[in-house]
Length: 194
Image 1 (cartoon, rainbow, N blue to C red):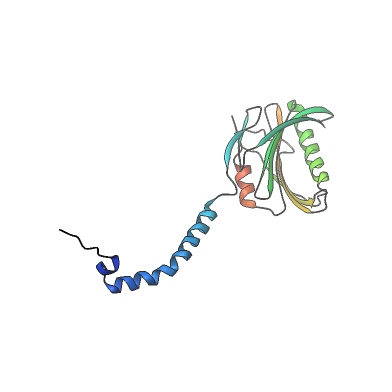
Image 2 (cartoon, rainbow, N blue to C red):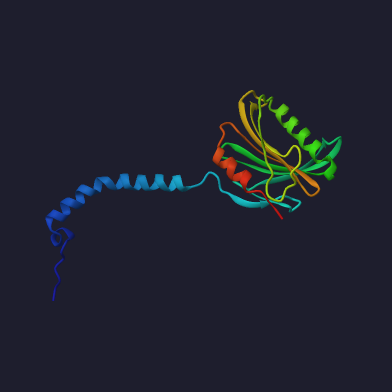
């Protein structure tokens, strides 16, 4: 017995074929829309849990951090600063800490804040109290928002937090050309001490 070959057009009523052909020109648009929606779901801020070198402070950073250390003058003498930070979505996110005795915390935070503001030539900073859970409430614990200039003269927005816990003082900062309050809030609200 021989089978006859039947094409799809012969099996399908003509009204269905016309309807399918009318949809065909929309498929490239659907594929493009799907590609765009998938691209929109790709986060430019890929938040991850990190811990400072001392292990005391946990936080969220929007990218894989680089880590380093250097010695800087703070509180009247050279001290080792441990740093970690990364750049994402046009902003630099960083956390630095310095080991200091508790008696030097307030003075060190005030000095660190002044140096940061001077570095970007900021004027009229907005200062709000800030003490993440587990930190010590002392003078100088604050979030400081300011606008200044980069070394090349471009405008930079800075939001920096200064706080202390145990035998360390901390600075956490976001530098960006354009402020992103949601990203900064996610960063600053994530701080947790062990």
